[in-house]
Length: 359
Ligand code: NAD
Ligand code: GLY
Image (cartoon, rainbow, N blue to C red; front, side):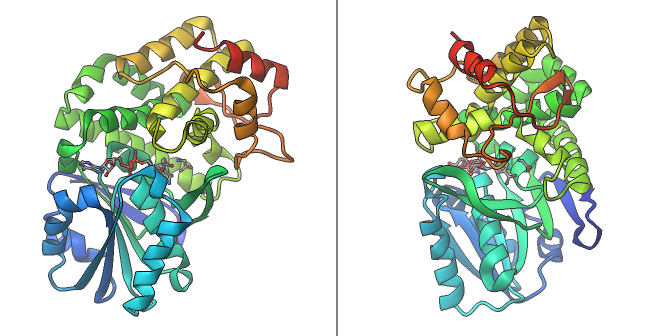
């Protein structure tokens, strides 16, 4: 097992990465501070892993809430169901909420833990590649609103992250690939060596080679932990983690949550970001081609949905947490392996990218 640390002073916490972690009682119980434990999960993950988790927590008073599976349920309506249960069952302030699932469950469970009695102990057990390399680390929690993705939420750090690589065996290919988009993102924003490793070893990842998966999960978590340690509340450098996300969120919202899954939308968004970086003269056309080639190698989509026009993109991109004074700001690349802080680009140039990229 590998152990990393997110260095945040008193709020520092470990990330455990390895095989068969769900079955390790000592590890699973280590960060729980009270008898009452609520597992928040969904129907899919519950059928696969709930029993194993409950078995590891046999000395606790464990209850479970199973939410329906899907991004469309990452909403205030379903968040309320978690609060209803916590209140009905009289959960105390020292109770523990354990999120067992992908990014949707992690974000919702974390937000519920942040809000209930102004904060209870929270543990992340991420079960998708995306959640293990990104969403479970760093404390961003929240839900979607029909008018904007992740627009209602809080920063709330977990007590620990337990990333069991074995659970990825049951993940479908589409979500495996979507998670790889976020790994490519780390390569693009600050880790050229990772980008180059991915260029050489993508076939190993797609074949679910355990060693390769463990390597990229660890490497991604190191990148994420370093950024979060430097800028927990995203007043600066943390924003580079949003490469491709402003475009991607517009696609997710514009097409209806669930049509394009997060990693797919981000992959197309990184294509847009590469194109715009080139239009600004920051990266060469060869760099753009290299980025698109890696995304395609990962079997990620790179062509934007035909259904969305420039006006709709601009409208949706104007609802983004990076925007300042109503101006759209995006993360762009100065090179492969180096992202710049958010900038507001000339509207005409942005519209050119939105019109021409992928045509
Ligand atoms: P998800 O949570 O919807 O999981 C994807 C699918 O895989 C679901 O159907 C789920 O039931 C299933 N699943 C989960 N684990 C499984 C397993 N081990 N075996 C089989 N099936 C399994 O989606 P996701 O891609 O994990 O996360 C996307 C969400 O994460 C989005 O809502 C996004 O906004 C959020 N996100 C948050 C952050 C953050 O920093 N908080 C970062 C990136 C993304
Ligand atoms: N996924 C972006 C962040 O955690 O900041």
